[in-house]
Image 1 (spheres, one colour):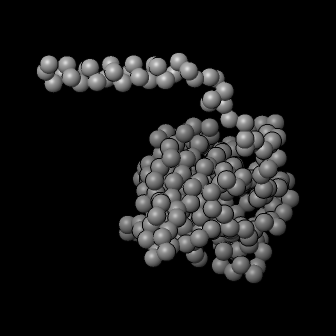
Image 2 (cartoon, rainbow, N blue to C red):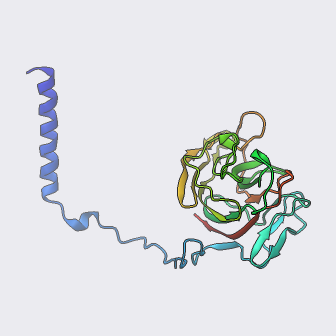
Length: 257
């Protein structure tokens, strides 16, 4: 018997054994009853927070936020009519609470009267984990990307300077945009080396733009990213230093995973 016939015979023999093993199987052999998943009441729309979510911005106040530059000071961005608007003079804000893995929903809007081009057109950022002062952390870019040319790893939906979005579903300035994010924080060995890298999935206006990608480290404006050990971290919103009109946010909620 040649080599190919021996391989085929072995495969057929294995298949016969598996078929015999399945003959005595019962449906209940593969049924699982515990643990029972917790009951969560979903929102009436995709924007509404489910019952187990933390409302990071409830449209009324910034009790969940502090200034990044000084955690002893409350965030002082403008809140009016259920909308949060960036205050570029006071700088970035971040959550009081730190997180590891989570599901996050956030809505943002570029002002209809926006001016400027490229990166100077409604620039901001959602830092999925803030690892230090200023712009330290892992940034999901926020920008007017509707008919606005810039480098593609710096457009809306990009992991800034690392990953280009799979599509550009941006709406015209003045319309609300949505991000839905699944974030898996990195883990580290006791010596500070990377055990598992950060991963993220992003839906931009319901369109998958980052598909469980493996980040190279915190995002960098200049130079290559590299990991530095950190633990649970706040979520940060950027008050970018460009001269364009400030953008707004609403309906920010998170589910810890």
